[in-house]
Length: 402
Ligand SMILES: [Zn+2]
Ligand SMILES: [Zn+2]
Image (cartoon, rainbow, N blue to C red; front, side):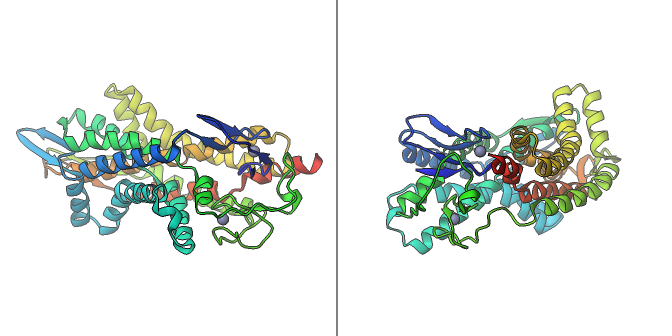
């Protein structure tokens, strides 16, 4: 079977893979496909386990904390409700969506697509479900949420006594199983089982797909010469249209929001009647002074360094796509940009968690401030910027000279 690399457009011939084997693009070293023995059974096992742990993390107490004789226990479900009542239903919806509903949907889709029913499902529904799985699995933020919970605990340690409930331990086990589930999903194989294989004629591996007039569908990886993918019906392009221009526009918008995001306070802690507004940077300084060095470094990297590094790296990639002197290095940088993307969301979750968990009135409570809105918009603009950039343009000149 011949597949195209998503990062450099090179056609790679993949013969049948053995257990724990991966096919790597010879050009840019990106992983093309991996194989695990009994993949379907493992997928069902891991997604079922994830589902069980996720559901059991909802009602039991998640964390408890006490200060001056006041004890508060809160479950995830109560946190969703409290956010909706006290602030806005939109904020609560986003929180619930990213930490609970998306993983739930992904687990259900994985179970369905790997069960016996998948083969017999009518192609129209199967196409819809496979596309939904492709879109939702990239929206996973459960792992970031868990790290944010730990950061929040470190922030609160000096103010109150913290205890973890059953819900918290169930959520940890869920994240571990869920990450394994995501790493096992193999979409090409999923389409194969639906008997939707369309191998175009006259393929030569080692050359770029574009040189052979082939477009790769970005949803299902199908190669085609048509305007729409024959497998999932998505519109196809040789390259994402105006990818550099769109990436620049989103990055500049993000840079503008970066200024108020760093200058304005992101939250306000009320401790025994005293207000302490905190910006991102002052939060890092407080953590450092209280001796939580690893957490201070983590937040400094995720919230201050990564946004700046991302902007610089993306501009470098856009320049590289014109010059094309080091396509391999540029591809590696792009892969890092993709991985780093969601880690800047840690601070957003920390504020949401503190706001929804810490409600002991004037004794101890946390309120969100306008800075966190600017910060969230900035992070989202950067994620869109990286996604709108097409890494294959880094290799176009290189392929043309071959
Ligand atoms: Zn490649
Ligand atoms: Zn497709």
